[in-house]
Amino acid sequence: MAIGLKAPGYYIQGEGELDKLGKYVKKLGTTFLVLLSPNNKKRIGDRIAASLESADKKVVFSEFGGKCTKQAIEDAMTVAKDNGCDVIVGVGGGTALDTSKAVATNLGGLPSVIIPTIASNDAPCSSVAVIYNDEGVVIKALMMHRNPDVVLVDTGIIAQAPKHYLVSGMGDALSTYFEARACYRSGAKTMSRGKCSMTAMALSELCYKTLLKDSLKALEAVEQHVVTPELEAVVEACVYLSGVGFEDGGLAAAHAVNDGFAYVPQAHGMSHGEKVAFGLLVQLQLEQAPQKEWDTVLQYIKSVGLPSCLADMGITDVKEEELRQVAAAATVPTQFTKNVRADITADEVYAAIMAADAAGRA
Ligand SMILES: [Zn+2]
Image (cartoon, rainbow, N blue to C red; front, side):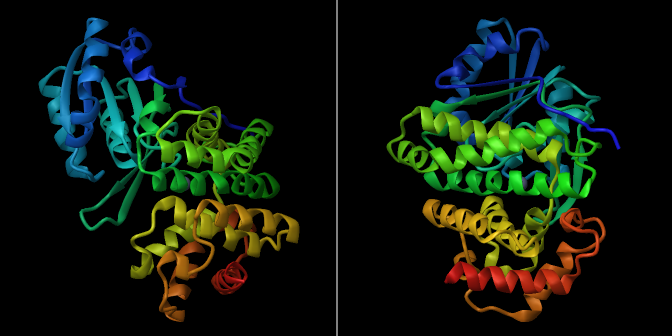
C-alpha cells in the first residue's frame, strides 16, 4: 500500500490574526457565507465582517443552531444559494465547523475556510464532517473533496475560552501518536487512504512531546486569558499536529472505545477528548505498553485533569452489561480497534477497560 498525506491548504495561527482574514482569503471568491452561533456573532461577527469587507468581499451571515444535522446543513445551503455565496466560512467548535464543511462539499466543493474559536478537538484541519441525527447519534462521516482551504486560529480568541475546552483538546491530541503508531505497526489504512507515513509518525510524535512539555503552562495561560509561547505550542499541537496526525496517521482503539461510550448514559456529559483520553488508557492495556510509557501517560492525564478511571468519566455505578456493550461496539468490523491487531475480541476490550480503570484508580 502507498502512503497518503492530506492537510489543509493554508494554516495560520497567532494572536489577532482574525483581523487579517480578508488578506488570507482574498483569492478564494467574492461572497462569503459565514456560519456561526448567535453568541459568536455577537463576540466576533463585526471583526469578521470588517476584515472581509476591507478586502472587498460581500458577507452573508447564517445562524448555526448548535447541531451538525442534515437539516442544519440544508438550511445553511439554502442561505448560501439564495445569496450566491462562493466561499463557505465555519466559525466555532467542532459541530459548526463540520456543518460548514458539509455545506461546502454539498455545494460542489466550494472553497472552505475554518475558524475555530476553541481548541477542544482535532476537527478543524481534517476533511471529515461528522453528521448527527436529532437524538445526537452519529449517522454519517462525510468526506470532503479536499481539506479546508484555509484554517485560521486566532490564539487570542482561544485564550478567552473556558479552560475545560483546551483540556478536552489535549485528550484528543494525546492519543494521536499512539493511534498512529498502532497503524504504523499494523500497516492499517488511514483516513488519507494510504498507510501511515514517516511524516505522519513524526508529526504525531511531536504532538505528544509538545503536550508533555507545555500543557501545564498553557493551561495557566488560559486561566489568565493570555497568549504565551506555551499556549501557542499546545494549540498548534491540538489543532494542527493532532488534526493532520489523526487523518494521515490513522485511528485505533482509543477512538473506537470513545465511540463505544455512547452506550453508557452516565458518560454522556463527557467531551470527545475526555473519552478519547480514557480510551487511550484502554488501548495501552490492549497493547501491553511498557510500564514507563503507561506511567507517563497516566501522570499526564491526571496532571491536566482528564479522566483516568470510570468514576472520572461519570460512571460511578459500573454495570458490566453496559461496558460489554462499549467493548462490542469498539470491535465491530468497521471500528478502528482492528488497527491495533486484527483479531482483538470484545472480551479483550472489556478486560482492558476494567484493567485501565483499576490501574487508573490506583
Ligand atoms: Zn478525535
